[in-house]
Image (tube, rainbow, N blue to C red; front, side):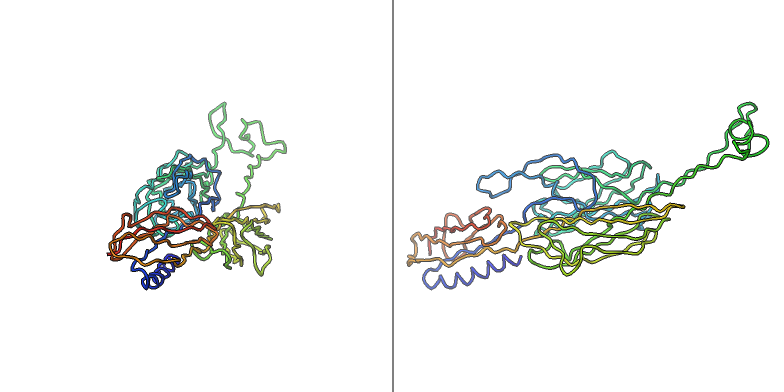
Amino acid sequence: MESAYRTQKRLSALALAALLAVPVMPVMAQNAQPQPERETTEETKTPATDPADTKNPGTDGQDQKENLAGLVSISDIRVFIEGKESDAWEKGQRADLKLTLTSPRPTSAFTPSQPGKDPENLAVTRLSDAFKGGTPVITLASQQDKPLRLEVTFEDVAWRGKEDNFAFTLETAGGAARKDVRIYEVSEKEADRQDPEQNPENGTQTDPGTDGGDAYGGFGGSYGGEGSEPVKIQTATPHIIISKYTYGGESVQAGKKFDLSIEFRNTSKSLAVENILMSVETEEGLTITNSSNTFFFENLGAGAVRSQKIPMKALNMDKSSSPSCTVSFTYEYVDGDQRLEKTAQERIAIPVTEPDRFELEAPKDLTPAVAGQEYTLSVPYNNKGKGTVYNLEAYVEGDMTTLSPKQNLGNIDSGRSGSIDLILTPQ
């Protein structure tokens, strides 16, 4: 990573200067990773997580508890029927459900595997819900030092035709957590029309609205002498959902401007929506720049998709986090002879990282070193960044011997300073 490169480069220069007096020098390596967070980025039902305690390595004995599975959220949902992406999933129909799971934590915190299928320490278990079948296939799509990205495909899933909640359990080395997500693509087929009731006296069917009687046993027509009117079923309510959003990468750096691109669609197959008012409310850590937080769209056809870019800026905070923004929709639609109004709301989490500002200083008050005799070298350091530097290591290279060629210094909190003490024997 860039910060590690800067540290290595600075040490190389430091080593050259120190060799004028002492032929020894430490080489530093660090692995910085962002702080844990979790707000779900997709519209899901409240997950019931199973707590799991893990110990963050290198914490000077401090027990830090976290549920790694709970730090993973669902960022994209797609339905594929016969290999083609679809926005309609009917009762009993078989489909492949593809989910994208992400976390701002690095991949190395969850699995030691390289990108590919069936990564180590990661597993998914289907739960009993409104869907049946579905063999999970997990593909790791991120490198070890990058934020986690998983592609999970549930193959050959059938919808039972009831509720639209899809649930599964994600298991990591740090524990397990239940994940719930709403599948908006499901839709009931139109029910077949019922046959007229049989005449209880002669067992024959009667035609409602005729002189021979109606469907209620042959007592003549309805009150007005006419056949009964069929019951009218209202069209399914159209929903506006955010189907996709991007913010320019896997995370946003604090203090930088970026565009939040939102793609939303009308879930109805038959009804258009009108007079759409979209508003965006940001939480601490985010702000909208050079734009209003309200946007108007005249209409959105049945099944149509629109997108909107919102200029934003990530603010500097005390530590890396995932501030959220809430996107609200108010819109109207016409069903028969009625004009109805509806609102919808979704929440988006954006991971914001603080730049790494870990610095080393040149050793002071150096004394001459004598070959074959032990020599103590102290290298001062200072973490000037607002985030913690994780798993810092110091190791020694050169024409010398040492009892501890590598030192694990653990995590260096923001604002903390100290020194790395090395005992060397020059040859």
